[in-house]
Image (cartoon, rainbow, N blue to C red; front, side):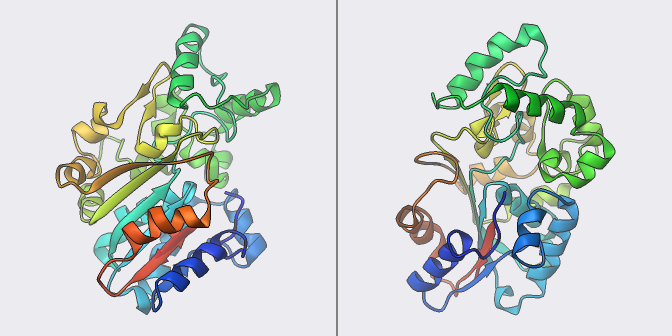
Length: 309
């Protein structure tokens, strides 16, 4: 969010690091806009379903990825790349390992930077929610403010309105625990890729379960993603943060997570510090060598996000 695919100080530096440490590796850094400014703009404004479809076609038409690739998704790029795998893995090219860093797999219950209690909750749930969020954020210092809560309230009231839901990227993974029926009915992206609707897409589960590894990183002091453990598929239900294994998405294996876990292919990991505040040294030691440097001819896709072959 707020970044471009190829900026030298961010995604471009990661691409250069992979290419330096893994000579001969093809690294494809995914853009969702045409040009740097458009790419940044597209991280806030656009239809995520259209962006995912564009990326699926782009990867399919990149010959260097034809034999498969490893993928790294940064922040919201994590759930967007998961959508690429779920919707397009059977069409090729095939992702082998998907690593997500600070993703919002179960959405967000507050606007970025607010780890205060969502102000759209009913009064009787706010006290319980406050303790639950504080615990789930690992004791990270609250950075909420009156302005931030006002923004959250507006998002809570407007996230599912047609224009907002179709054009504001963050609204497309906003999960208001006080308005779950409206979320399921109106949100155009997250309920689909999480197979939360009654008519489930079995292909999504088959595709995600076909990964060799799904690696889910949360940031220890994340105050941007609320709840922080959305990066681990935890869900804030309005009162408490519910762990993945206690949810139907896992118990009934809606998207293949239980199958991956049973096969030892689902990894939960923690990165130090705040949201997306990692060093290149950390990325090299904890991501590049363990997950991107396999024995097979290599390619990497990165989504604000990256893909590598």
